[in-house]
Every structure is written in C-alpha cells, then in structure tokens.
View 1 (spheres, rainbow, N blue to C red):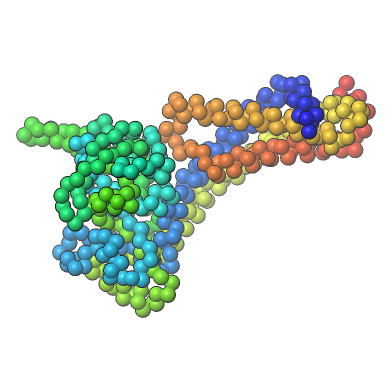
View 2: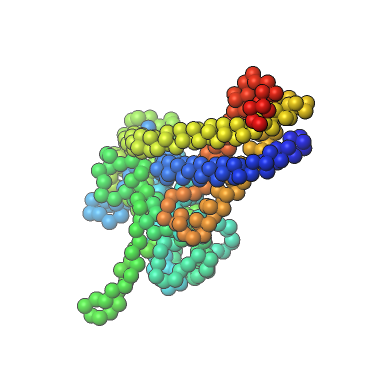
Length: 418
C-alpha cells in the first residue's frame, strides 16, 4: 500500500502541471454540483416540515379570534381548547403569535413547535437557528428579524411577555442566537388565498421586513415596522407565556376515527373558523413539486452530462500522458493491476487538492458576502453530490487506462511514447 502511495505521488509530481489543471477543473465541478443541489433543495424544502400534516384525512382550520360569528365557547385559542372537545386529535401543528418586547422595543412574536424548528430553517444573515443553539436554564433563545433597534446576535436582553391566563407582564432573560435574512421564507399564515388551491409552499412566504420611523401630523415620531422575533412554543410554555393560534392550525386524527365522526368534527370546527381538508393541499403540493422539478430538470441533466463528459475527458488525457510510465512499471515487473492502482492513488491526490480548492473558494466567497443573497449551503445532499463527483472521477481514472491500453504490449507502449 505504501508503495502505491509513493509511486502515485511521484506520478502526480511528474505531471504536476496537468494534474493541477485537472484539480482546478474538478473543483469547478464540485462547486457546480453544490450550487445545483442547493438550488433544488431551496425549491423542495417547504414540503418536509408539513409532510405529516398534509394527510388524507387531516383538517386545516383558520380560527377566528375576533368575529361576530364565533361565540366565546367556540373560540379556539390554545391546543387544550381542541383536545378537550376532540380527543380523537393526535397531532396539532400551529403557527402562534405572542406579544414580546426586547430591550424596550416591541417585536411581533411568532412561535413554532420544536418539530417545525427541527425540520425547517430559514436563511440567516447571522448566527444560528434555534435548533442549533445551546439551551440554558432561565434563558429564552430567540431569532430576530432585521431591525433598527440594535437587537443583534450574541447579545442578551431583558424580554417582557404576557403571562398566560393572567394578563400581567413578566420578564425573562433573552439571548438572540440568530438573525433572519431579510426576504427569507419563514413559516407563517397563508395570506389572501383561495384555500382550495393552497399548497405547503403558501405557508412559507418570503417575508420582507420594513423597520423605520416617520413623523405624524402632530410632529411626533411614529414607528412603521413589522419586525419580528421567533421562539419555540415549548420554551414559551415553560415560562408560562401567552401564545395563541393565528389562522394556521393543522389537525391529524387517530386512524380509528370513523368518517362519520370526522364529518361531525368538521361541522363543529366550522363554528370556530374556516375549515378545509388537507388532502387537496397535499395534491396541490405534489403538483407544485412536479412543476419545480420539471423546471430544474434540464439544468440538472445538463450539469450531470457536463460532469460525466468532463470527467471522462480529464481521465483520458491523464491516462494517455501516463502510458509510458505504465509500460516502464510493467517492464520492471509490475502488473497492469498494480499500474492502475498507482494511477488511482495519483488521482486521489488530485481529488484532495480539488476539495481543498473548492472549500477555499466557498469560504472566501462566504467571507466576502458573495453568497449572502444566494441559496447556496452545504448539507447532507450537497456532500453526497460531491462524493458522487469524486467517485466518478476515481472510477474513470481506473477504467480509462484499461480501455486505452487494451491488448497493447508494454514494449509498444514505450516505443509509442518515445
């Protein structure tokens, strides 16, 4: 094994210029693969968080908080309001609101369940998402939007909230762990839609924040803002904060619930707001995913073909250059299999350099802010794409010498390269 590494290194040095060119081309393919997978992920990432909620028998409800047609006993404000009336409900996913003040500045509070936080992460301008932040007892982790109040990542503030079923204010230590990129999609209510045509995508609108001040007719400064703060529903429950449904509640039921009982539940829920089946939403989501994949498919196929053709060409050129070395190794007692192993280790060195170059380019681009307005990220599927490119390159670097050499005798190979 050490001999293969040694001679692979010597072959790499012997054709250093060519191998460096191949490494640069390979790093370009790696970066292109990351860009392509990131683009695809950005279009498909809105289905996963609601996948378990868009079921065949699920229900979506928009509870009305202030309405003449909803009586107090029919108002749905908290999970317990639903669970008490409908024990058949086994899962609730909701978008909640809460009142919150950070360091003297009012923010619109948006709270997500831990499951939603774990399955969906908006694009951040700074810091980390809630699922990645370290929890500390007595400290509430939050993510904020763009704001002019200098509420920034890494700082701790005094937060003020309303106590549930009490109405009194209470304070808590707040740590800002992240800041959402302005214009990023976040989990929110679907607005102004025909809900028979809604898909999962409509619950993740791009949220542009405005935060400014203006002067009113009396010459007084007035805030004009929709800045927000995001917290975990379970964390807010721990401190007893008031949080309530805001027009977005998904319900799932036990499998044993009969169709007749489901119909009764839906009729009762209509006294509390607008009710829709989630099955059409699921079908609309599949159609949306299909249209996005159809749009990206030519790009994906083009990139894939480019990667395959480029990899084969690079391996063919490299193998052709190394033919004389193969002939000499064979004449000195090596077998073709051993020659090919040397070529493989030489290619591995090229791949390591390509990976370093790719990482360096992406890190520099990130540090200079060139990726701040893009959807480029590095995760599991991007890593899989990179590994696929490297494996393809390694396979072709092994196969190409075999194809080129064929049944040629070592003596002929040496003479042909003199």
